[in-house]
Amino acid sequence: MESEPTRVMVAVNESTIKGYPHASISSKKAFEWTLKKIVRSNTSGFKLLLLHAQVQDEDGFDDVDSIYASPDDFRNMRERNKANGLHLLEFFVNKCHEIGVRCEAWIRKGDPTEVICHEVRRVRPDFLVVGSRGLGPFQKVFVGTVSEFCVKHAECPVIIIKRSAEESPQDPADD
Amino acid sequence: MESEPTRVMVAVNESTIKGYPHASISSKKAFEWTLKKIVRSNTSGFKLLLLHAQVQDEDGFDDVDSIYASPDDFRNMRERNKANGLHLLEFFVNKCHEIGVRCEAWIRKGDPTEVICHEVRRVRPDFLVVGSRGLGPFQKVFVGTVSEFCVKHAECPVIIIKRSAEESPQDPADD
Image (cartoon, rainbow over the protein chains, first blue to last red):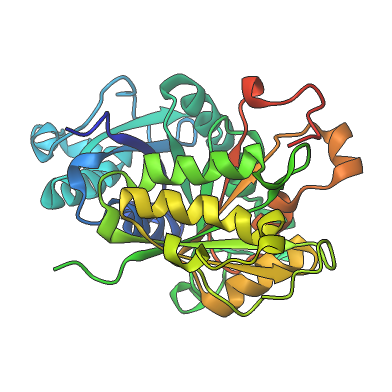
């Protein structure tokens, strides 16, 4: 019998180009990388903790205390929530459900860097996976990088998964 | 049938206190963390690539083209090599063999930061695990941190595993 599953937190966000409910290229990539390279066929050995840090007041969404763990949890989602972060989580929860890996997904409002580090302290994952646009130093000055902040400040091991060049839109600051 | 195993490079080094053949506290911790939290029971899904970057001319060891993959590979080790990096690798290879996870171990001479980044480019692991003493900013100025350099420069995802406070010797710069 195996011990407790390895708890992997994956920070996910919306696409800057397509908006909700589309996941950003980097967070989709980080999620898929985790399944392919870490979880592999050992679906019972892992539990994914899917956190969406949502910029305050972005869509008036206020259901921040709920946890979503299966496709059924989204069945009664109200129409207006389909346009916001909840629908974003549905994408990831459905994928987990398809392959049979346990998950929990939730939304927290606030600055993504602070929210992620706060949630790491609160739920204590074994490690954190964060996607990155892989920006150069010049672009970083303007858009900041959540991933670098997490590596320095999150109280757990952090792995950054960069987008590949061919996955990047014309403007690399887009995602 | 599963696809190719996930190839995890783990950078290992000797203890600064006990010297060869003892592994440093941080690299032992990084290795054990990888087995416990990533490999788990899925031993056929992973292959560990154990790289020991050895400071030039430290022990006159010159067998840098060999790869060690099973305890047998160490059987005919010459006496003088027992005191050096090769004996360090034996510790990790034996552990892999015990639990049944495939591995390859080898030594490269040079500055650890450059050696690790060079070997990542050469063997293209899926990700790199590096231990860290978890030094504060003041201590870092004097001893440098290989792990931070790797996060910035290695051409693959990197995960840093910090020692816990209770594992640290009196002087945290020791390892």
